[in-house]
Length: 115
Image 1 (tube, rainbow, N blue to C red):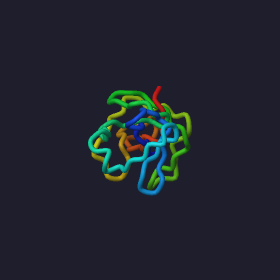
Image 2 (image 1 turned 30 degrees about the vertical axis):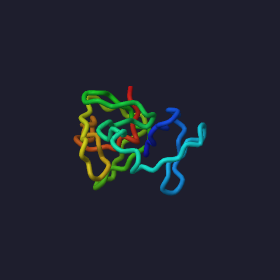
Image 3 (image 1 turned 60 degrees about the horizontal axis):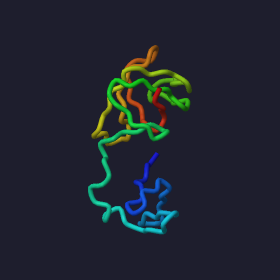
Image 4 (image 1 turned 90 degrees about the vertical axis):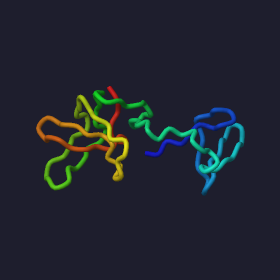
């Protein structure tokens, strides 16, 4: 899940991508990601609802997830406590956690919601 930045002109949250440009439907402002500069904070990790996650938070899995290399899966509604965030993840798995009955694993923040 890719969160787009708010419009730099009117601060609208309803921006969308149109090819290589970002567009605001409310004020019709267009800008490129390159022109955006350092306004985006890439160190913030957000859940599926856009809430900021922090180390030690508890989350709920919102979708059944297959466990790689195993026949088991993480079921929707599973509570995961005391997560640890990974800010420089290359594969998109930005949550490190232990799940009861399954052990240590990594999750993508787009498949969890904060409690």
